[in-house]
Length: 186
Length: 321
Image (cartoon, rainbow over all chains, first blue to last red; front, side, top):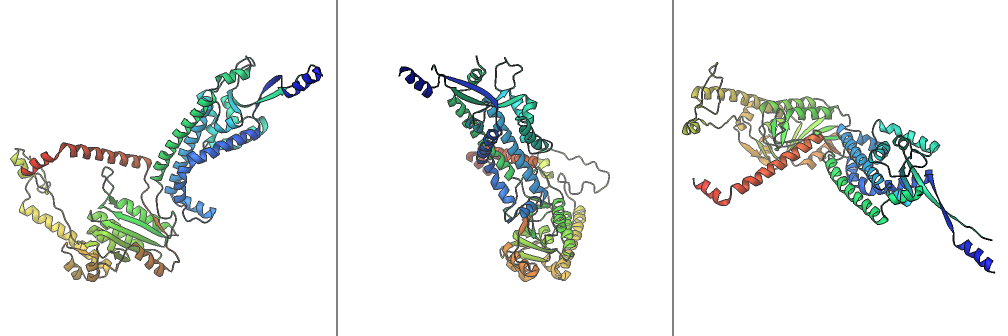
């Protein structure tokens, strides 16, 4: 009976935990990014929405809206300027938070961390430096030539589980998985 | 120490982490509104960005080229002509509406704009209409007269068909303070009209003759544009201004009304179901907007200092002197 109780106790109470550091899965990456973009949409993009609305006022289709946006050089300049400012703010969000905390809001929710790629197995993990994070976020710029990085990033994630610019910056997005071990004396 | 513990030791506490996130988001929100405000300086139009009637505003003094250091409205002929050409080239634009609120200005600049409008008016696909708001006198009226139709408010000020070249003469003030004007010229009339010396009767006659020539040219242009007799226009061209209602009776204005009247007329004339105005104006670069903003700030600072320096007591002493 005593041994049975001990066994039952062991089943309910984990005696050991093992922590695994894994490259972040594609779904968690995507989920974290969507959350970050949603947050940016609320904070950064919404002040610019009125400007865009005034440029395409009266448009009843995408084609008409595109025609109106490209109708004049002034409209295009206005659009370019807004895109430039949005890009600066977006990069600032990712860079500042990832540099200071190693995480953004989306990454916190999915338990993802941005770390420097250690030179060897014995080296301790640490947060990346400012320029590493900045370099890795350059693919967010919606202008030439950075726009060519978008398909490269997607292919890189699919095949190597790591973004191309993260590899360039020598950083890695990891997730922490804690698995409970149960040990029995029986 | 395991890698996980090292990483966790490097991470800030949850409380300070969320605090850092909130501060970062607040700063980004602040800058987002500032940048959106800057961008809105270049997002024109309460009007639609696309339309079938071009709106070109002629406001302020009419000049040949823009003076970037002045804060007052200017209608530079270089820029206005560019806008007219742009509207002419757009096949979607069926008419050009000129909204005029100007006291006039340079004769050369006014002629340049008037000639350009007359050229576009001769193109059967583009109707031109002038809408005079508060003021459309002198050179501004010359411009309005070259359009197909002039609309003015009953209380608009228009007319003033004349030429002015007045200036201040400082020679007596200089005499009072012992300042001499050293006249060194090659060419008897080289410094004619100089504010630093007396204008002789002979010089006055010469300048008057030139002003009369310009005036005669002005009269003939108005007569041609308005299909009136030269003598009829000459009778009205004593420099007097007229209110819109009176101007209509004299034949200087066609219709009393405003921009909405113009839209109704265009709807009927051009058989369009809807009139969509699109404003054509000079694109303002970021540096232009920033410079104008600084200029305005500097002006406000100077005005504030000036007001404080000249207090009420000081003003009284100046007036009494």
